[in-house]
Amino acid sequence: EEEIPADHPRYQDLLTRHRIETGIEKGITHLQGMHAEGRGSAFDYLLGEETIPSADGAERAAAAHLLLADQPVLSINGNVAALVPGEMVDLASAVDADLEVNLFNRTPERVKAIAEHLREHGADEVKGLTADARIPKLDHQRAKVDADGIYAADVVLVPLEDGDRAEALQEMDKTEIVIDLNPLSRSPQVAAVPIVDNIIRAVPNMTEHARDLADADEAELRSIVDEFDREQALEEAEARIRNGL
Ligand code: ATP
Ligand code: MG
Image (cartoon, rainbow, N blue to C red; front, side, top):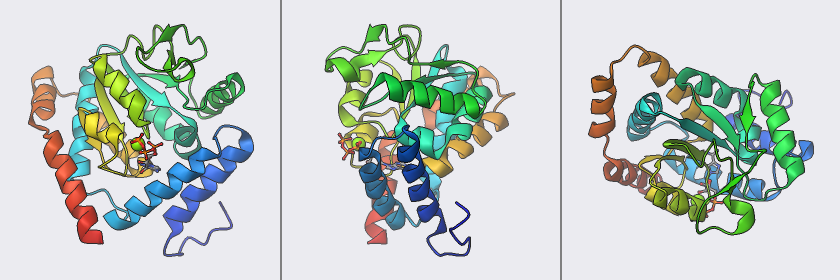
């Protein structure tokens, strides 16, 4: 990361791409993760590479949902692990959530490497290695989750999630929070809280909101959740992207 000059106009984007490359080299990110990154980067460019006001509102609503949850779980895939490992550990501690490794291209080696990577970034317990439950209606590999993790969770944060699994989790009646730069992708379309923002900005901002709301009572958290309008958030993101074009 030292080789990228900080005054480069696309500094953040280059840094992000470099982290995915490093993730691939370390065996925590699948090669397909670079393709997902490229797609995200195009949408971020059109958004102006900033957290738009509707995304900030979604991040606050997401923090309130996580604080209200009985059993919140933050799902970690290869791109998430490469881009924001320490930030996900911080968010988990701010809202008292579990971290669970959950991969599209699942191999035992990659699950272990990601769990180890998260521990190097301060996580103590990492779920996803037991994989003793299945999400209904998904093929075998993609259905694998921990019985006491995502399977039992009431609120799940699934950043950069694939559309099929996002739909299947939705059908399990979980409150789903999705981070995805493409507001038209199926994952944000099915989420209770679609966050159209770069995960690099979204996660630290959710942690900041969670810390700000740490002393809020249940009624206040409920009102933040109730006032959030998912359709409006999706529309505002799409309008911003069209405007960017
Ligand atoms: P589907 O409709 O099945 O979800 P898709 O084309 O969206 O198909 P995905 O594998 O879900 O396929 O693509 C990855 C998604 O992650 C893309 O929508 C992309 O915009 C998003 N993405 C990539 N990098 C980031 C990032 N850094 N922050 C937020 N979102 C990102
Ligand atoms: Mg998608």
